[in-house]
Image (cartoon, rainbow, N blue to C red; front, side):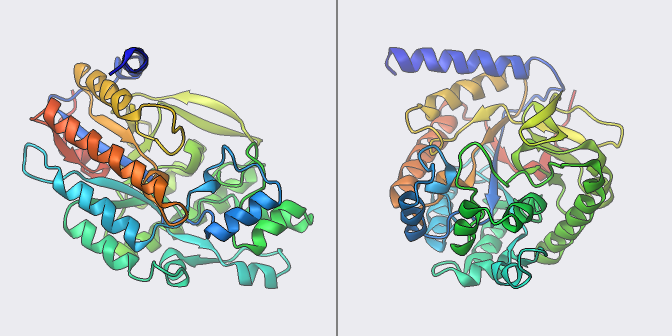
Length: 373
């Protein structure tokens, strides 16, 4: 590492230590890789990206520039990387694939003149994309091989009430994106992705019904309940948690700070959590303390900064919980994005095993196998 990389790694270690100093502890070296957004649409094609750019939309710092529904190629190449790196128990590296169960049914929404929200199951969305029809089979294979473990992220990754309201107002940018089968707002400072944000607290009962339906789709698809949940954009009200508990969720994934809605977009009440903390419902919190997001900041050395964060986690007897969104592994729009992400990911996994040969990889739903102190 050069001097700037060393400084960055040191800063990463110290920042992670603030997260890791509190909470429950474990005695083993455990790595959990939590990856959000699988099954969710973003930008449907490279042609759509060009159209958005020509329209003058702010794509420079937007995930909509390279993020798309994962293709068969994306999955197969990711699985190749995961399969070749094995922990001390002989089992391969494992990705917790936090999945979205549905996407907007654009035709039905358009037919209602934007007055009704309709969705299709993610498995139906797969069939509409050109290199995606076999995706569910690949997901199931990855699950059977112990490298790709779906967990519940939401029915949609979309605050559809806000989206419909803007479409009904004939917002030019939102309508243009809609015509490309995308939910992009055309701006980097406003999005519709915060599925469990609310404008009025009366939205919560409807959100709970949406979650219940999404969890049922998960059970029908994978023949088991999701034991964990991660809210889109780390944003949810504790009032939705009883339905999670009722449907079998035991752990809440997230950062150290939960963002509780206030009724205004991008204005939230922060609530701090620590690893292993248990709330009044008996739900436990799993805290992400390592970051691997090369697609979101290409200028940062995420391999060495993530290794420093893992070192901090192990120093404080915490699992190393790596946040690594799907965007880092998809190349359907831009293969260079996927190639760089997988190259860095391969280096990260190799380095983890070399540095800590006694490490084990587990998925988030296996947290209950750990003894917390």
